[in-house]
Length: 635
Image: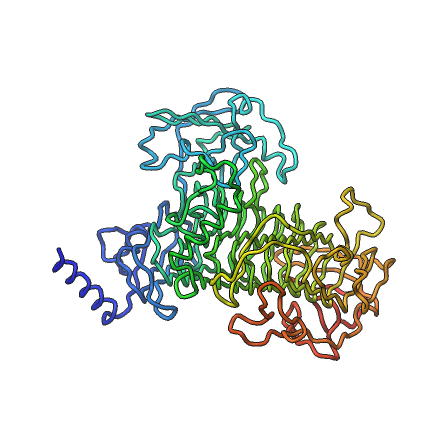
C-alpha cells in the first residue's frame, strides 16, 4: 500500500507540473465514456470535474444539466486555477431539481403524484425538514424540497386542507402566487405530493421538484482556486445555514480558499444561494444539539465554534480570499450570499441581489440579502440589494471590513445591520433608501459620505461578549461587550420623513441617536434636511429641516435612476478629505481605519468613482453637482 500511494503521488506531481493545460467540453449530446474533447464531449459536468487538474478549463455547452457537481480537486494558485465556464453566448442551466409527470387530477385544481423513493437516490427532501440553530419554523414543518411550475415556486402548506382551500398569504410580495400551494406525505416506499395548480394542467407544463441538497459543492475542504463563470443555477433543496453549522448553499466553497464566482444567475434556492462558510468538523448546529446544557445560549456556543475553527487553521493562508462578482441572485428564502468566517479577506462586488425571504413562511436570525459573520478585511462594494428583509447583515467580528458604493432600497427590515462588532469598519458612499436605513448594535464604525434617507437606530449590548482581532488577521486579541459609540460620522446627507410620524420613537432620522452614546463619537460635516436632526455632539453641519429633496427611485429597463434635488447648502464643498489620520483608531481593538495591506485609507472617490478634492467634496456620495435638481443613473 505504501509503495502504491507513493507511485500515485509521483504521478499526480508529474501530471500537475509537466502536463500542459487542457480544455474539456461538456454537451447534452456528449458521452461520459468519451474523451471530453470538442468533438467528443462529456455528457455531464461531473465527469469533466473528475478529469480536470490545476490549470484546466471545463467549457459547458447549452442545455439543462441536473446534477450535483462535486469537484475532486481544485487549482494550485490564483494563476493556476480550474475554470468552470458556460460556453460563450450559450445558456447553461444547472438545476437541483427533476421533472415530474404523471399527475392525477383530484378536484378544484388539485392534482396528486406518487413517486417511488428510489427516484430520489440517497437524499429525499420530502423526508428532510429545515432545521438548525437560530431557525424559527413558526410552529410547523418546512421540507427542504420545493415544487415549481414553469420555474415559479409554490408555497408549502402543513395540512392538505390548505391545498384544497388556499388562502392569500399576508405580508408577501406575490399574493396571488401564494395560492399555488403544495403538501407532501412520505413513507418507506413512496412520496406523495398534492398541489393546487389552479387552472393549469401540470402534465402539459414544466413541473419540477427539488431533489438535490446542493449543486456545486466539494464534499471536503482542500479544494481551492476554482472559478465558476456564466451559469444559471437554480432549484436546490438547500438546508438552513446557521453560523454554527456546515453551510451548504447551491454554490458552496466549503471552507476553501480563492474561489471566483462570477457572471452567474442564481435563483430559487430553498434557503441559500451562495455560501462561503465553514465545515462540519468544527461544529454543526451545536446549540440545537446541546440538550444537556439548555441554559447555555447561542452566544457561548458560537464562541466555542470559533475556537474550534481557529484550532483547525482559520487564517488568511488557508481560508477565504474569494471573489463574488457580477452575479444576479434572487428568490432565496434565507440569504443570497452567506458565510460564517469563510468570507474573510474576500471581495463581494457588482452583484444584484433581490427577492430574498419574500415568502415569509419561516424566519430566523440568519436571513438577509447578504449575511456574514467575521467578514474580516472583506470589501463589499457596488452591489444592488433590494426587496429583501434585511439587506446586508454583518454579525460578529466585522473588522477591517469596508462597505462602499452599494445601492439599497425597499428592504422591509433595514438596509444595513451591524451587530455586536468592535470595528474598525468603514461604511462609505452608499445610498440607503429603505424606511429603516441603518441599525447598529456595534461600536468602532465609520459612516462617511452616505446618502441616508431612512431611520438610523443605535443601541448597546452589555450582555454579550464578542471577539476582536489583532489588525488584519484572525488572531483573537480578546472579547468584550458593546457599550455603544466610538463611531465616526463625517459628511453624510441625512433625509428625514417630513411630517410623517413613527410609532417607535427609538428610531431617529439623523445622528440624533448618538446623543446617548456611552463612548466618545466624532460627528462633523453632515447635512440634514426634511426633519432629520443632528446630534447635540455635532458643531459643524448644515441643516434645512423644511427642505424636501424629493428623492425618487425610477427603474427604466435594466437602468436605475435617482431623482433628487439639492439646495446650495448641500452642494457646497467641504474641504476635509477623510483619511486614516482623521479617523484615528477604533477604541477596543486599538486598530486604525486603513486598507487591508496596512496602507492609508483615503475616501477620495465618490459613488461613481469621481475624484474628490478640497474644491469638490460635498457631503453625500456625489461630487460635481452643479444643478439643484438632478437625475443620476446609479445602476
